[in-house]
Length: 575
View 1 (cartoon, rainbow, N blue to C red):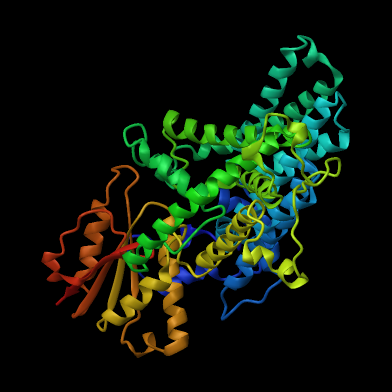
View 2: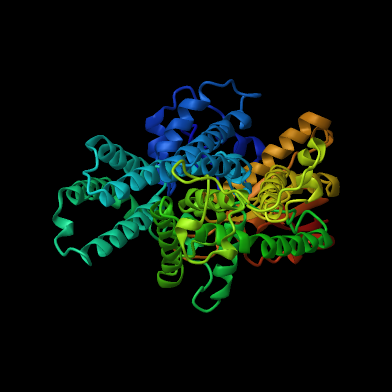
């Protein structure tokens, strides 16, 4: 939100005590700030390209401020809007790929309730726009590959749209390059298959248009090369190199599976906010549900891969999905950039996974007897496509009343059909539960929750309060802004802060970029603590270095030393 407003984090003083109002100044809309300011501060302080932030800047100007600060609801609404648009967009991608209304409806339904989709949509960030652009680019890829198979030249309009979408994707998130890499793997697979039959296949006109798209997209990517070189190794990106995935090699795989499962399944699992017993039960239910549903999903996808009318579309999306996943692990294990550390990066393959889930569920819904196939794809009946006759069960049909016929699915009088439909219904219901889990902040995808820590500080501290954190970049400033915002909200709702003699103050202990330590900041902190009246409550929040507080007569309160909502905190009582 700060960059979208055209404000700068560099206006916040470091290594000194500041009031919460100074932090909240970053959320004040400035009439004189324009898109130029947005772009300037992004390139100077952040690692993100500007497209979304420029759009958000214009969007938030449409809404009035709240008590002089930007409306949080307005800031989030643009991301939510893009998330809503992604539902019909996935429907369109599915229909373009498979030509099946059923697959399209199921894919759109999964997208609508997807916990991961809800997670991205409720944040004031650029990931839902990136998802939309991935969907648009995949539509172009599907069209291109189908034209290649028909030996038809891709229309120039589609080629231009494809290049434009890819360029916008890079200008929205630099990791969109993974989308391009995965699409490249699909095209290489098609090229290899065609050249194995005709060595001159790649010289055909329909391939030459693809080369034009590749060149145009490459030029659009190279424009951002200087920006990428500038942010490489910068403070905001260092966290992605944390750990050693080559030694702790199982952790990235586990995280990847958690993020992938969250595309359609999420039960209460926020370990810092709900009882451990609930988390364990949720984990057991999740595993049982996966064991129950995955065989049917796997067989459903296998059917789509074997059916002549859906084979090509399934091949495109499966190869794209596998290519994207392979790139994630190449970056993680090969380059030491652990892309599994943050769930939001999974936007690259998210739409393809949703469409494939829709395709697998469509097979389940039609109750196609895959387990009893005899190897002849022509004998498998389905109404997934208009050219194939619907599946009908043959044999004796008992005469039953209309009422029993109406409720026979409930009475389970049709065993071959009912279990598959039950799976589809339960997957959609579990997706809905997962979306609600995210909405109520009960899932494991949640980011920092200042709304959980601020009340604890309010309740525990009666004396004047200082909140200190170590600081590397604007990410830590944002987390303290979240606390300042919550204190302001609590003040407006119950007046607790107003009853205090001194409102909470903040201290951002910045790490010296030359010495790579916090020694200078710690000396300043101790000096300023000496000047404050006693008693005093000092909260160390996400404080990632050692500090000697005995000289300040500060004693740790063992009751307030924990982790909640992504914040690690300790309370010291100073007398």
